[in-house]
Structures are given as C-alpha cells and as structure tokens.
Length: 541
Image: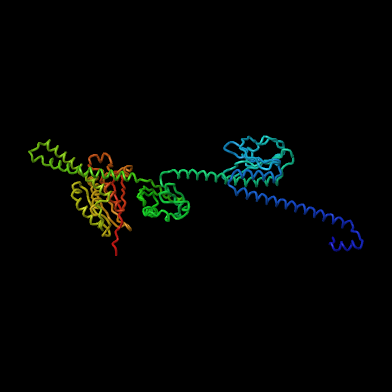
C-alpha cells in the first residue's frame, strides 16, 4: 500500500523515515516518470518531424518548377535524416542521371545533369523497394559511403522514375526505420511533384506549339466548347471577328454575330455531322466555312477566305455567258440554213445522213449553250423573281409532259402527292426546270421495262420531293461529283447517252438559291433516288 504526497509530508515533519518498501516504490515511480518524459519527448519530436514532412510536402507539390522540387526535396532529406549528403537520381530512358546533390555543410543544393551507373540505385528502380546498407559502398557521386539509404520515387501507372538517397560518408551510424519512413514520405511527395511538373511542361509545350500554329495559319479557326463559349481561335479569326483575350470563356453568340454563322450553328444543333457553308462578312469578304462537332471538345469552325476565287468565278461566269450569248445567234442561223438544204434540191441518202448528223450536233451545241447561260443566270441571281409556288401543281405538269417520252422508252411513270397544297417561296420556271431535269434523267438513264416514281410530301417545316428510278444506278465513288459542272459518269451503260453534264449542276444551283438541299442515293444496277428539300411557305395570316 503506498502513500500520497500529503501523508509523506506529515511523516517527514514527525521525523520518521520511510521503510525499504516505500523507498523502492518511490524509485519505481521516478523511473516511470522518466520513461514517460522520454516517450513524450520522442512523440513530440516525431510529431514535429511529421509536421515538417507535411510542410515540405505541401511546399513541394505546390510548385510546377522541376528545379525547385529537386532542391527542396534534397534539402529536406538531408535536414530530416541528419545525413552527411543527400542526392536525387532520375531515370531518362535506359540511363540514370544525378539531378541534385546537397551536402550537410553546404547551404544550397547543387543542380546537376550527370550520368551515373549507381548499381544500388538501379536495384531500387528495378525492384521498386528501398535499400538500407551499413557497409562501405561507392555511390552515384563517385564517393565512398559508410551507410546509405535509397528509396524509390514511384508514380502510379508510370512506375519508378528515380531514387532519393541519403548517405553518411564519415559517420558509420546506420539509418533507422524512422528515417526510412521519413525519406519514403519525401520520395512520395517528390514523385508526385515531379510528375505534375512534367505534365505541366508537356501541356505548356503543346500549348506553345498550338499557339504558334494558330498565330501563323492562314485559315480563320474558332474552337467553341460544349457550353457554346469561345475557347480558342487563330490570329486570322481574331482579325476577322474582332476577338480579344477578354472574349475567352464568353458566349460565342456575343462575338460571332454574323447571321450566316449563327445559321450554321443552328444547323449543327440539329445535325451533328460536318457542315459546310459560305459566309459573307460585313466587309464583303467571303469564307468557305466547315463546322465539325467533336465529342468532349465542342465545335471547331475552319474558314478559308475565297473572296478572290469568288471574284474569279464571277468573271469566268460572265465571260462564258457573254461568249455563249454571242455564239447562239450564228449557230441558230447555221442550223436554219442546214435545215433548208433539201429545199435547194433533192439530197441523196448520204447527204441526208450528213445533214441529220450536223443538225444533231448543232442541237447538242445549242443545248449546251442554253445550259451555260442558265447556270450563269442562276448563280448571278437573274430571272429569280420569287412568289408562292405550289410544287404539287408543278409535279403534275412535269409528269404530264414526260408521259410521251416515258411511254416511248417503255418506262412506267407514276406520281404520289400527299397533303396538298405543297407551297414554297420560289421561282416557278426554275423549279419546273429542276423537276424536268430530274425526271428526264430518270427516264434517260433507265432500262426497259422500268419505273420512275415521283413523290412529294410535307416534312415538318419543309417540302420533300423524291424522284426514284429503277435504272442503271451510279457507282458509289462517282456520287460525290455528279452535281459538278460538266461531270458525267462514264460507264459501259452510259456510252450512247447524250448529255451536257450541266443538268444536275443547274438542279443544285436552283435548289441552293431557294435555301434548299439536294442529294442522291444510288445502288449500281438497281436504281437511283434523287431528293431535295425546300422550306415550306407559310402564308401570312
């Protein structure tokens, strides 16, 4: 049974001495207090050490400069382990380099890029485990160490990228488990910080390359994120649309105010495919625009200026129209005189054949000139007075006019109309020309007995018209070019069919002038379907 302090004090005052058991208890209590004090000291020291590791780790991971990371980590490694020297090795490919060295006596670490063949470091890199040695060993800096501690720098999904090391060159005191824990913690912070610095440097390099490209590219490029905010643009786009750095992250609609660009974006909301359009800016410059939607990025608009090309094309069209107009009169005169040759006297069979061939050729040339004039007028916007037009009435008129040629070619011609009247805002003569060309081609490129079906119906806010035939079809590789001027499909089946190569070009020009779209679907040997969309006309209430 022990005594409390009050009892001990009373006995002392009475002059009584404690017995042997009491002395033994006091001695044990004193040792216990000393042990607790030492444990408390160690815990405080460990707590201070952990706090230092946390502070160093926070400082290291906050920087994106690899040089600063190397310096701070080597300084912390030497200070926390009280080693004679510390250094950091990094692996580059199949080689190992000393990147930073800090001696206990030096104030600042030394930055290096010195190749080394430290066998212990390679062992740590290959195994991914720390190494603690208490024998004389030659280290990466070329010196001899009495004791050393190497820990790996590891990054998930990357592996071991280097080694953090501390050594004692004079002192033979071995490193402890606590020092191993401390150095491993620093190595983890260093690996994360170095990987962040590497990724940041890589991103900055990519950004610099991208900026250099955008600064020097001739095209106007605008990148808009998925929230329709401006993200990136080229110098040409900045000049064309007046974009400054303050526009970054702002809604694109606030800066790209051109109506045709806005319409292009509206189409992209409905159709995620690559879209093409011609954009005319306020200063009359013309751009060929291509809009692509990229998942995870947003939309990319690439625009090439074609103002000069449009001007040249207009001059060429005017030249062709002038020449064609001047050629038509003399050709008509020649055609008339040839047709009157039989009135000057009877012709033998050979002469009659020659006259027929000459008239056929003249007819072909006259048709070509007429088509050239039509293309020029349509593209220039001539003869395009607009008014409400009933497409169902035009379809019936064209079908009625084509029945004779269809019957001669043994082609069954049918029509299907739904929800008339099918009204559009357009030019009646040009829209009739579109249907005449499509129905004429469907008959001409068909094979007896064949079928041609014309259908027209409302498709939401549009009028949809298709001309389907059971003809020879169009090869897949040719379908993208059939709307080009003078382009004709050359196959065995088309050798004997006459044509100028301008009919479908006229169709495309007329439909586009009416804010519509035309396309083809075809299978070789089975048939083709030509289709076009026109905006539905809504009469004012």
